[in-house]
Amino acid sequence: MVKIEILAVGRLKERYWQAACAEYERRLRPVCRVTVSELKEERLGEKTDPAGIRRTLAAEGGRLLARVREDDWLVVLDIAGESCDSPQMAAELAEVIRQGRPVKFAIGGALGLWPPVLGRADRRLSLGRLTYTHQLARVILWEQLYRWFKIIRGEPYHC
Image (cartoon, rainbow, N blue to C red; front, side, top):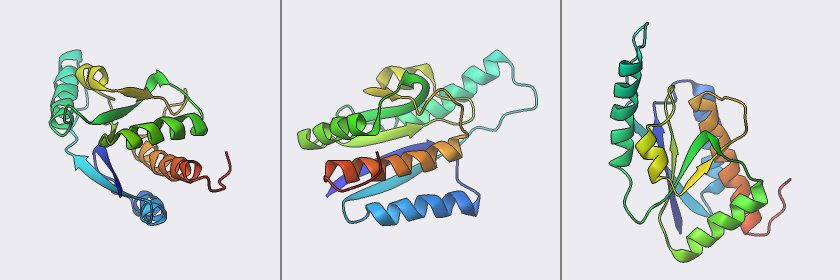
């Protein structure tokens, strides 16, 4: 069975986000196992200077990179990344799975991702030019995983 790990900075505290993710997890269970590793989100003070931002990104990014192995196919959600359509991403994911590479997705915290994490990424994926909270980005990722696996399996799903 295909295994995918989502590395997410921060926790989903609200029940509605948890419920949305749980629904897609339930739908995906027959075809793949998705685990979520929630990594500690740094607390930000009221005034965040550039040095504080760098420290925060480095702390969160260091925890994230500690969970990534050399052979992992790492996809980071990045507003400055490349956009693609769902069939294109499904084909890319299918090829990586065929190669037997472990698959990991990374979602940064409120400040985004540390540059070394972006540099390690095999794919920088943009969900579009709009900015989303990291909680909503996680739900969108779950939905897309479900959509990509429907496409990979040749099952109908609105594209």
